[in-house]
Image (tube, rainbow, N blue to C red):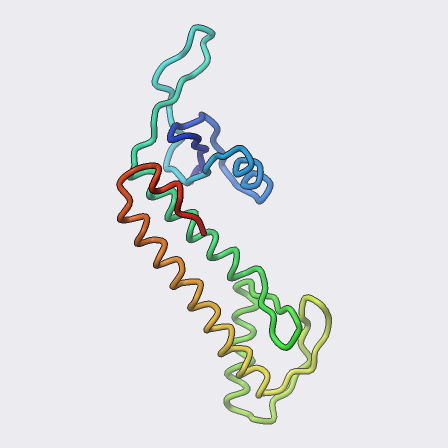
Length: 169
Protein backbone atom coordinates (compact mmCIF):
# COMPACT_ATOMS: atom_id res chain seq x y z
CA UNK A 1 0.00 0.00 0.00
CA UNK A 2 1.09 3.53 -0.70
CA UNK A 3 0.01 6.82 0.86
CA UNK A 4 -0.52 10.00 -1.10
CA UNK A 5 -0.99 13.62 -0.16
CA UNK A 6 -4.02 15.70 -1.13
CA UNK A 7 -4.44 19.45 -0.79
CA UNK A 8 -7.52 21.43 -1.71
CA UNK A 9 -9.08 18.37 -3.36
CA UNK A 10 -6.11 17.72 -5.66
CA UNK A 11 -3.29 15.22 -5.63
CA UNK A 12 0.03 16.92 -4.83
CA UNK A 13 2.27 14.27 -6.36
CA UNK A 14 3.81 13.38 -2.99
CA UNK A 15 3.56 9.66 -2.22
CA UNK A 16 5.02 7.53 0.57
CA UNK A 17 5.58 3.80 0.97
CA UNK A 18 5.49 4.12 4.77
CA UNK A 19 4.14 6.67 7.22
CA UNK A 20 5.21 7.99 10.60
CA UNK A 21 3.98 10.66 12.99
CA UNK A 22 6.35 13.31 11.61
CA UNK A 23 4.88 12.90 8.13
CA UNK A 24 1.34 13.24 9.48
CA UNK A 25 2.21 16.31 11.54
CA UNK A 26 4.01 18.00 8.67
CA UNK A 27 1.22 17.53 6.15
CA UNK A 28 -1.50 18.42 8.65
CA UNK A 29 0.37 21.68 9.37
CA UNK A 30 0.21 22.41 5.63
CA UNK A 31 -3.54 21.80 5.49
CA UNK A 32 -3.00 18.56 3.60
CA UNK A 33 -4.56 15.12 3.91
CA UNK A 34 -2.66 11.82 3.69
CA UNK A 35 -4.66 8.83 2.44
CA UNK A 36 -3.90 5.25 1.42
CA UNK A 37 -3.97 4.39 -2.28
CA UNK A 38 -3.29 1.25 -4.30
CA UNK A 39 -0.93 3.07 -6.66
CA UNK A 40 0.66 6.50 -6.76
CA UNK A 41 -1.36 9.08 -8.72
CA UNK A 42 -0.03 9.82 -12.18
CA UNK A 43 0.27 13.35 -13.57
CA UNK A 44 -2.44 14.41 -15.99
CA UNK A 45 -0.09 16.83 -17.76
CA UNK A 46 3.11 18.82 -17.41
CA UNK A 47 3.45 22.58 -17.14
CA UNK A 48 5.75 24.83 -19.19
CA UNK A 49 8.68 23.93 -16.88
CA UNK A 50 8.06 20.18 -17.28
CA UNK A 51 6.67 20.02 -13.73
CA UNK A 52 3.92 17.40 -13.31
CA UNK A 53 0.33 18.56 -12.83
CA UNK A 54 -1.99 16.27 -10.91
CA UNK A 55 -5.75 16.11 -11.17
CA UNK A 56 -8.58 16.51 -8.74
CA UNK A 57 -9.52 13.75 -6.37
CA UNK A 58 -13.01 12.33 -6.74
CA UNK A 59 -15.35 12.36 -3.76
CA UNK A 60 -15.33 8.57 -3.39
CA UNK A 61 -11.53 8.51 -3.03
CA UNK A 62 -11.72 11.32 -0.49
CA UNK A 63 -14.39 9.43 1.44
CA UNK A 64 -12.20 6.33 1.50
CA UNK A 65 -9.30 8.44 2.74
CA UNK A 66 -11.43 10.11 5.41
CA UNK A 67 -12.68 6.72 6.67
CA UNK A 68 -9.08 5.53 6.88
CA UNK A 69 -8.09 8.69 8.77
CA UNK A 70 -10.92 8.20 11.27
CA UNK A 71 -9.99 4.56 11.87
CA UNK A 72 -6.35 5.57 12.31
CA UNK A 73 -7.27 8.34 14.79
CA UNK A 74 -9.41 5.88 16.77
CA UNK A 75 -6.59 3.33 16.83
CA UNK A 76 -4.04 5.96 17.93
CA UNK A 77 -6.28 7.07 20.80
CA UNK A 78 -7.03 3.46 21.74
CA UNK A 79 -3.36 2.50 21.91
CA UNK A 80 -2.04 5.75 23.46
CA UNK A 81 -2.73 4.69 27.05
CA UNK A 82 -5.50 4.63 29.62
CA UNK A 83 -5.54 6.10 33.11
CA UNK A 84 -6.93 3.97 35.92
CA UNK A 85 -6.50 4.70 39.62
CA UNK A 86 -4.16 7.62 38.78
CA UNK A 87 -1.79 5.37 36.82
CA UNK A 88 -1.40 5.39 33.05
CA UNK A 89 -1.55 1.90 31.58
CA UNK A 90 -0.08 0.87 28.25
CA UNK A 91 -2.86 0.01 25.79
CA UNK A 92 -1.12 -1.18 22.66
CA UNK A 93 -2.55 -4.44 21.35
CA UNK A 94 -0.04 -6.57 23.27
CA UNK A 95 -0.83 -4.76 26.54
CA UNK A 96 -4.57 -5.14 25.91
CA UNK A 97 -4.07 -8.88 25.56
CA UNK A 98 -2.11 -9.03 28.82
CA UNK A 99 -4.77 -7.01 30.64
CA UNK A 100 -7.43 -9.39 29.31
CA UNK A 101 -5.40 -12.38 30.54
CA UNK A 102 -5.13 -10.80 34.00
CA UNK A 103 -8.86 -10.04 33.91
CA UNK A 104 -9.64 -13.69 33.13
CA UNK A 105 -7.31 -14.85 35.89
CA UNK A 106 -9.05 -12.43 38.25
CA UNK A 107 -12.46 -13.88 37.40
CA UNK A 108 -11.16 -17.37 38.18
CA UNK A 109 -9.25 -16.45 41.36
CA UNK A 110 -10.55 -13.64 43.61
CA UNK A 111 -7.17 -13.73 45.41
CA UNK A 112 -5.22 -13.05 42.22
CA UNK A 113 -2.56 -10.36 42.71
CA UNK A 114 0.34 -9.27 40.57
CA UNK A 115 2.89 -6.49 40.26
CA UNK A 116 2.10 -4.56 37.07
CA UNK A 117 4.28 -2.06 35.23
CA UNK A 118 2.41 1.05 34.11
CA UNK A 119 3.72 3.97 32.09
CA UNK A 120 4.52 5.80 35.31
CA UNK A 121 5.86 2.98 37.49
CA UNK A 122 5.02 -0.22 39.30
CA UNK A 123 1.67 -1.00 40.87
CA UNK A 124 0.32 -3.86 42.97
CA UNK A 125 -2.90 -5.03 41.34
CA UNK A 126 -5.60 -7.25 42.81
CA UNK A 127 -8.32 -9.27 41.11
CA UNK A 128 -10.78 -6.50 41.90
CA UNK A 129 -8.45 -3.91 40.32
CA UNK A 130 -8.17 -5.91 37.10
CA UNK A 131 -11.90 -6.50 36.84
CA UNK A 132 -12.60 -2.78 37.29
CA UNK A 133 -9.75 -1.73 34.96
CA UNK A 134 -10.88 -4.10 32.23
CA UNK A 135 -14.55 -3.09 32.45
CA UNK A 136 -13.76 0.64 32.48
CA UNK A 137 -11.32 0.29 29.58
CA UNK A 138 -13.94 -1.62 27.56
CA UNK A 139 -16.40 1.24 28.15
CA UNK A 140 -13.75 3.72 26.98
CA UNK A 141 -12.98 1.56 23.95
CA UNK A 142 -16.64 1.19 23.03
CA UNK A 143 -16.96 4.99 23.17
CA UNK A 144 -14.13 5.31 20.65
CA UNK A 145 -15.75 2.82 18.29
CA UNK A 146 -19.11 4.54 18.62
CA UNK A 147 -17.49 7.89 17.81
CA UNK A 148 -15.84 6.36 14.74
CA UNK A 149 -19.16 4.83 13.65
CA UNK A 150 -20.99 8.15 14.03
CA UNK A 151 -18.32 10.01 12.05
CA UNK A 152 -18.33 7.27 9.41
CA UNK A 153 -22.05 7.87 8.89
CA UNK A 154 -21.32 11.57 8.30
CA UNK A 155 -18.64 10.66 5.76
CA UNK A 156 -20.98 8.30 3.93
CA UNK A 157 -23.70 10.98 3.82
CA UNK A 158 -21.34 13.71 2.57
CA UNK A 159 -21.79 14.76 -1.04
CA UNK A 160 -19.11 17.45 -1.38
CA UNK A 161 -15.46 17.92 -0.53
CA UNK A 162 -16.36 20.82 1.78
CA UNK A 163 -18.69 18.53 3.76
CA UNK A 164 -15.89 15.96 4.08
CA UNK A 165 -13.35 18.56 5.15
CA UNK A 166 -15.35 19.58 8.23
CA UNK A 167 -15.49 15.99 9.57
CA UNK A 168 -12.70 15.63 12.11
CA UNK A 169 -11.89 13.17 14.86
